[in-house]
Image (cartoon, rainbow, N blue to C red; front, side, top):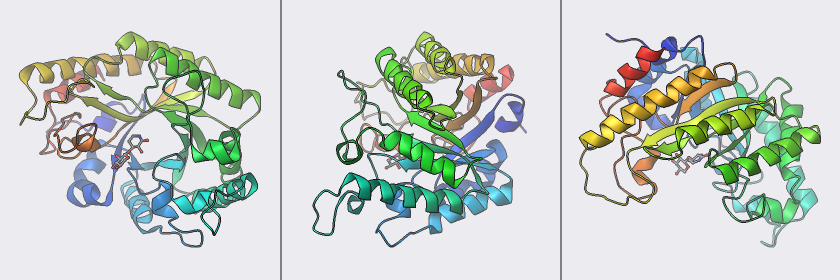
Length: 329
Ligand code: XIL
């Protein structure tokens, strides 16, 4: 008999989980008990919603939205513009050659308009653009078909189209490696440019795919401070705390070691303490999953290697980390 995670932090921020039809089917009650917000793990991505120019497939996204509605949960929309999980037809003409800027932008507008309007009563915020900033090198933006064909203002355009489709939706730019200083400065610059040109951006999403050592707590704090200095709201959008360091490619563990478990608890305590400190700026904490029985990290960056990144174990029971986090609330 333990408290609900989202109740504990009711006065601070929403607590969300990435879900998919399978996790809702297997664990819907558990998810609705501890979380008060959901994000579709894949079901609102371009390739899922819009596989062909004249064909939309809303079934799975609709059922996630219906679940949230029934359970009184919020929905974060993820994502309208990304370089991954986006179908080729979008960037091509009928002959398979690259399309032109005007066509791409008009397809983008039509996609955003259709999707954002369909979910305007349920989706209160959107990750409008995901992962457009480059990880290394001097260039601000990563190479992509969006950039090649439309030029760098595909980003501002996406925000404008989303705002036109639903003026009340909160619009986020979302990215990973968001707390490392080099990338942080690029994301800052991108958001600053968007604000300077009057684009309707309201927040920055920190994906927060973190591990036991990186990023450091100081780096996370500095990222929060830096982004917040733009006057934008922040959300933690895809949190998981891997028990493996990035370059640890071991595949032989059947369970996390005692040391991993202890360090993960400590990390969660430090992070939630920090999030609480910034509760006026951070409006939501979403985990990229709900419990250790399923996480995308089971296939990333090492395929088929189990990971245990959450506050709940594979049987949906609270881990000791949950109790320690709960004690902070
Ligand atoms: C991941 C999903 O979890 C996987 O199921 C899918 O195969 C690939 O995408 N950053 C994001 C998310 O913004 O959309 C990604 O989700 C994880 C990294």
